[in-house]
Length: 166
Image (cartoon, rainbow, N blue to C red):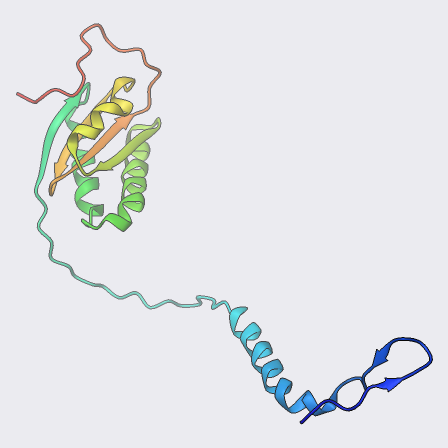
């Protein structure tokens, strides 16, 4: 269906009848769909009583303390328990896992703790261990988990970086 002929007035402008009602049947469904989409996009659910579902998972974890410096047995036990309670073995959740382990260590021993999960254990040698007053390096399922206390760079005279446990 062609447009209606324009009406010509004394000035050089062309005017169409407004609104063009012959296009209304085509644009009305689009208008309705876009309004409906806008309503659905603004929907945000609220949690009143979320259902808690217990999911049991069976996962085997190989854990070993590879290196440590200026740590006591209590620090090692707390770090080991934190790793066993949080570690899932998937890469996308490593940020949440390291944050949880760090919070557990901070609550137990105070100060600030850095937790890093590395693919290769040699990467840990180039991080915080150079300035940390105490750290632990765990090997967990072919990954390295470094738990280190924040420090100021002053170390003891017998400063040993990542060395093998005896």
